[in-house]
Length: 322
Image (cartoon, rainbow, N blue to C red; front, side):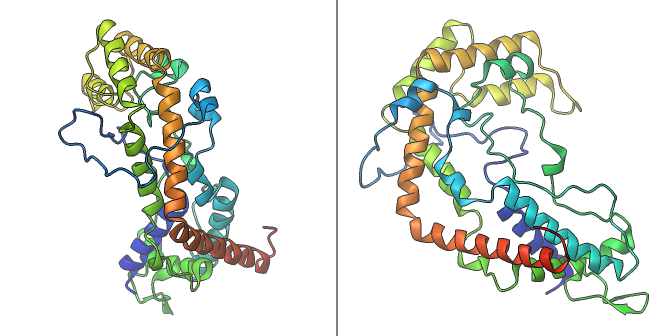
C-alpha cells in the first residue's frame, strides 16, 4: 500500500473512531422542512410514526437526553485508549529514524455529539453571547493527528520514501505500523464507516418530517416573524448571520441584533413546544432505525470492540496501564 493511500486509510480510520455527529463545519447541515423544494421526502417507515416520550417533550433539553445511536460509537475513554496505543506504536517507529514527536501531544478523545445546532439554536445562554456561532471546540479533539512537522519526518511517517539514512522505511510508513498494530485484521470494509452518521441524519430528517413536528415548525416560523425575523426554517439564520458577520473574519463577533434574534429563536422553540417534540421524535426514530439495521450495527460495534482489545494489548506490551 502506498504511503499516501495508507495515510488516507488512516484518516478514514480516525473519522470512524472520532467523528460522530461531531462537526467542525462553519454551518450546521440543513435538514429538510415542509415546503422546501430541495428536500428529499423519505418514504414512511413500515411501522408508521413511532410514539414519543412525553418526558422528553416536557423537558425540552437536548443535553438531558442520551441519543440511542451514541451507544454505537466510541465513548471518550475508549477513543483516548486507542489514541494512546497508536501514539506508542507510531512514536516507537519514528524513533528508529531519529525523529521525536511534537511535545505535549494529548491523545484525542471522542468528539461530542454536535447538538449545538441540530435543532437550530435552542440554548438561550449560548445564544445571548454567541448568536448563531458554533461554541469553541476543544483543541485536543480537532483534526487529523500528525505529531511530526519536519519534512523528512513526514516522509517517513507517511511512507513516501523507501529508506531514510540507509534504514528501510516500513511499507505505509510509521502510520502504517500504527494501523497494523491497532487494527490488525479488523476489516472495516465490511461496513461503511459513515453509515452510523447517515442513520443519525436519517433520524433527524424523519423527525423533521414527522406529522407532530411539522405544525410546530410552522408555529416557530410565526413566532419568529412576529418578532421581526422572517426565517424559512431553523437552519436559515446560520447562513444569514454568517454572511452578515463576514466569513473572512478570524473571530467574528455576534452583534446585539444577532444575539436578540438567537435568544428569541430559542424561546420560540420552547414556547411552541417545537424543541421538546423535535428531540423526542429524533430519539424515537433513532430507536426504530437501530432496530431496522441492528445486524449491521452489531458487526460495526464488533469491529470497534476488536480495535479496543488490540489497543489494550499494545499498551500492556509497552508496560502502560490501559
